[in-house]
Length: 290
Length: 41
View 1 (cartoon, each protein chain N blue to C red):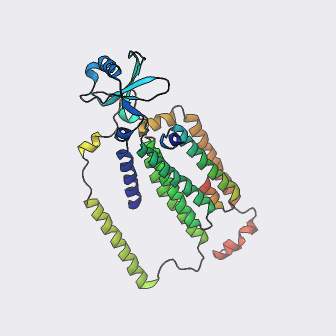
View 2: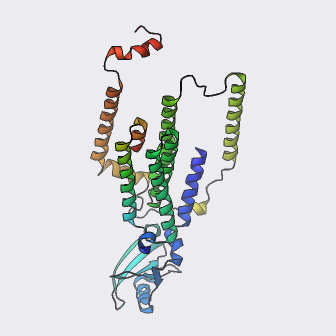
View 3: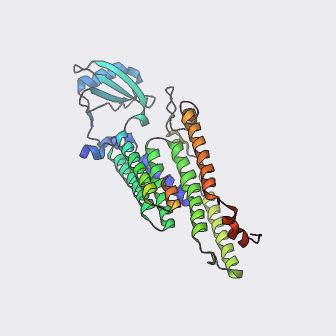
């Protein structure tokens, strides 16, 4: 679990480091504006502009547009006429601006490859444990993809529920179903107990060491998180997911719940023996009367 | 082609989702092991 969290933190840090504005410096699609266009943007935005507004004019086939950083940290997108007249304007938080940086593209292809390769691994392996490990790799890639889409809550849930709980469940099921009955799973006797005790002591010690190294939140990095705006820039949060799930998506959510319930009942109905005599060997093994 | 590789948009994410869905469908249809089918779902 700790290793999973470390990987997740590394993925999040990599995505943050390659955020759109960071990668925009060497982006060929952003170029400085013509003086007339820049003057029109400055006149239209006035004091709302940041001290260093970083006004650029991305290449676009149809529209002449300019982007400028505002004093409150948002990005203003201005549509200009060929004469340099302002036709329209919209603002968004800087993280809402679409990315065209190469860093983000590289991360996308890497995580997409991990997700697809893990999925292919799952359906192509005969060894079930290897298939489960491929599934974990696929889950990691998908969680990173969620982060790239600013769905941070889904990414965390993906890691905790799928890569954590579901993976452990599958490993347990594989071990229980495939393990020969007479095969020992651990060294028996005093030696086995001593080995187990040492392993527990090692894990507890490592956990304490890690907890002692945890630093309090840095106010600077905390402020670097995406800000909420009156327009509702929080689509990746728990609140936004809850509103969508129990608002417009209420019927599909409940329908899927009923579908899963029916699937569970159907699985039990299929798995249980059809006749009492089919279950006789199992009862005999348990010491009951067949 | 270069634009397709370096300008990642929502279409890329949708194609990725479709590919993963198809791999899952293939796993359900091709494999006979119940656990593999469950993982493919």
